[in-house]
Image (cartoon, rainbow, N blue to C red):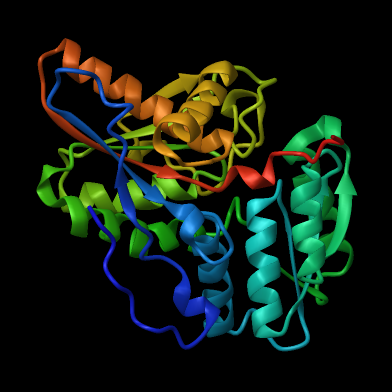
Length: 308
């Protein structure tokens, strides 16, 4: 469906959400009555789905008085939440400190630096869990200096998707929607949106995606059996979990660029691969379906510059 002309925004915060919902026809199984739709979250002002929870965490903390002028925002991140916090911190007058694994892409390092964020690097071998442990120690030592957004535990993370992502998708697809599928990183997207969809109709099938191995290349996603499980993760919202191998996620990201024109990251590739597998299952059972997922971000944050 085509996106509507949006009204002028009073600030960059007002530009978050209301992203286009696009149909991925090249991924749909041939000769089947199954549709695959995706939220184009790279259209957010910060370029990713993480704009939604980052802004919601800040707004809710301001409203409750937990975040006050003069405090610094801090969190651990592999990139997209860090970009979003840096953006909104700059726009709302907060200093931002980010703890990131040393091996995050140079593109994301440059972006957060451009917004003026302070970056502390954690051990790359410990991945996102190492950054979580480090940020918790920093906050423990200076609790009054920082407001720790704590994206893995903050209920405002799934609340953002409960309030915006799910209603936006349902406004377009209505009761035709049969499945919603999204990857588990913080788990905010699939848990928040899934919770809202279940309230709308328990028949909507909510599917979480995980990498199939602890050592994977689907950046932003968590293999829960080998990771610190996010406090906001609620398996009761999910009808099932699919496990996606790195190669399949990468191949699908390449397909989306070559066949649909969407240059997206590997977690988006995994999301669409999960949607494709659900669609093939429906086709095999001779069932109809309308599947929604999320294109999390733009691939420019993963493509490293190379010398000619």
